Amino acid sequence: MPVTDEQVAAQRALLRDDMDQHKVLYAQLDREMVRTGYSALVTGAFCQAVERRFARDDRAEVIRFVGDVRSRSEALAKELDPQVAERVIRVVLGDGSIADVDDVTAVGTQLVLLTAIVADEQLDEAALDAFLASARKLADQLMA
Image 1 (cartoon, helix red, strand yellow):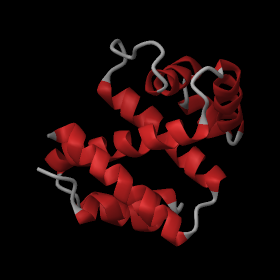
Image 2 (tube, one colour):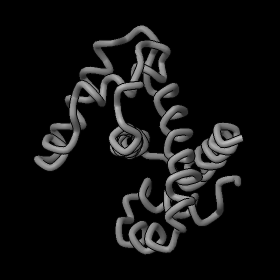
Image 3 (cartoon, one colour):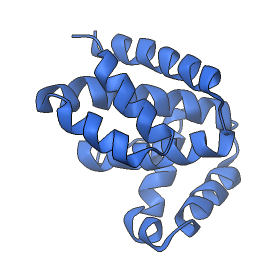
């Protein structure tokens, strides 16, 4: 089943840092669809964001970025495992594996890093819509 408009709306609210709206929209999503479509949307968006943000061979920038994200709040410093965060970025860039990282941890890490990348890009409404449309297309391909 393809990604739904409701899943995209929940993701959009999160990326716009509208946590109240995100919580409402996310709570309305079917739990099975969260495990499939919404997770695929997060992964698709994350892959696109990483490819836009990082050069394939710049490990130092990945390390700096993860450190910067962790320094944004005490909660992020505790929540975000730096080794896992660096690995989920590097695997998108074709380096390494996260086969030993459970799906919940991988998607949760992707979500935190995705939110940070999008916040740093300061996308306007049209650019965010285009980004999410492209991520949705990739997510649909991942689920096919």
